[in-house]
Amino acid sequence: MDDFPESGPLALPRFKLAPQPVRKKKRRIWLKVLLTVLLVPFAFVFWMLVFLVTLDFPHYDEKYEAPAEFSPPQAVPATTSPETQTESHTCGLHTLRTIYLAHGLDPEAVRLRFRLGVDRPAVPGTGPWDTEGTLHPDMYRVLLQDGFRITEIDPQGTDAATALERHLQEKGLLAAVLIQRRETGHFHWVVLDSFSPANTNGEEATLRVVDSLAPEPYGEPAQNYLENHVLSLLLLETASEDDTSGKEVDVWAAHQRGIAEMKRALQRAK
Image 1 (cartoon, rainbow, N blue to C red):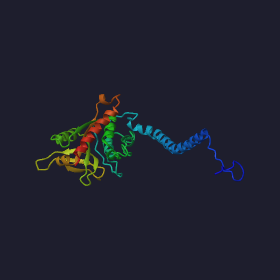
Image 2: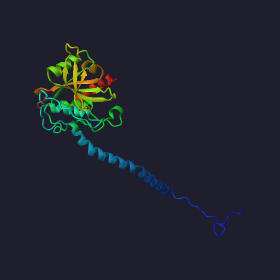
Image 3: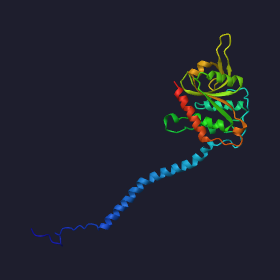
Image 4: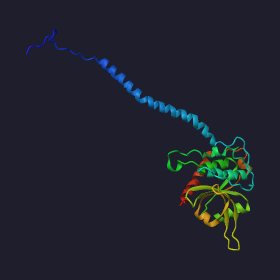
């Protein structure tokens, strides 16, 4: 078969491949476009996170700081005044407010709510830690910073009632208590402010409970309450001058101590 002519109406068109450098250049351009399309959204999200972190965290870190002016609590508390809880997560706040007011401290002046961190989850998205309210580590840090000394008592121990009677009745002091409510099974902070010992009439020892969910303080049988409802029992008293004057609380150590007690409380839960 004869070859087709190179020119004229019967000539076949000739296609030429683009030079190799041109094809590589086009690939590079498309690669840049693709990377730009993919990376711009990620870059936007990254810088937004950076902005939010730098905007929010330094302010929230202030919760770890003690009040600028230290005012020691009164050694002997006055009569407690129950507070009414209107939010689901503020029982710990109301417990400490009741204790602070009895000891002559102004909860607003020491920014108690902010420093307890009740309005933000401890560690978002982590199950048990993804909760608002007052956790032991924050409560320990704040109490120690504000001039209190904490003594942990095993509520199920054989000497718990005796230690509590000595603390409440003989010394006239207060206790912060984490209970498991019989009505719901939920954890709840309350104050214990007095202990009535058993008498010869057959009446058993009774604890007086100041509860932010109750309109008035109420009594509970001491032994049954300690054994079946109390998860964490913290006896509070004012620290000595040597413990508070000119000294800063070790936040890390306070948190570790609180975490240890919180673990014990969870183990006691039914």
